[in-house]
Image 1 (cartoon, helix red, strand yellow):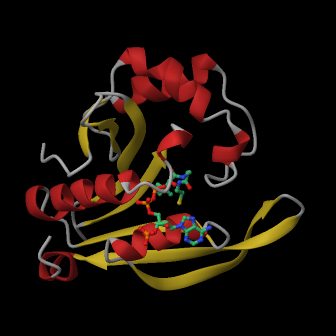
Image 2 (spheres, helix red, strand yellow):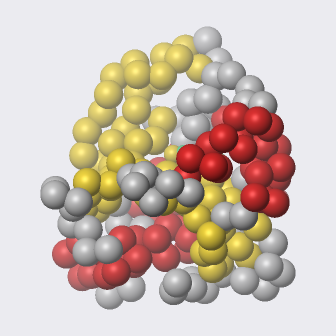
Length: 178
Ligand SMILES: CC(C)(COP(=O)(O)OP(=O)(O)OC[C@H]1O[C@@H](n2cnc3c(N)ncnc32)[C@H](O)[C@@H]1OP(=O)(O)O)[C@@H](O)C(=O)NCCC(=O)NCCS
């Protein structure tokens, strides 16, 4: 798979599950993902096992720091629709030391390149909570535009928040020259 400037993407392995269990039980991370309840290791393992089913319409890859080889997060395409040629992308940099250093945008660029050039998708979209300004900025850098909003969609920390839908079309991505 194509590598970015900072990261490469690789298949997730069973050994990664314990690390991911830490990320997806960290409230500083899960508030951005909409997970309201903790996950057990068993649940995480079951999620991993389900992913191995080739018929599944979700493909999730590990994000690795090219310099150190450290697994720092995951990025995936979900609900892949082969007729309308679209998919929803989700990303988490689970190692918080890597936040705001360009790794997330680089990983997103790699998966977009794969989605449009290799998988021949037409549109990739995502959902992001309105208070997640770092994520929104990162997605804008990658060429996503705001498509719509689901009002008061998410209750977190005592208040309702909007979910913003962002998307990018294949020709828009290819025209950026990345
Ligand atoms: C969202 C996420 C993938 C972005 O990856 P990242 O590596 O942190 O982001 P990048 O460094 O590539 O880009 C972030 C941009 O936002 C900016 N930024 C950081 N905090 C910000 C804030 N509070 N307000 C506005 N912009 C902010 C950064 O300066 C950077 O922009 P710049 O390059 O123009 O300076 C990562 O932070 C993450 O996984 N967060 C936790 C889980 C999550 O939110 N997942 C996404 C759910 S939709």
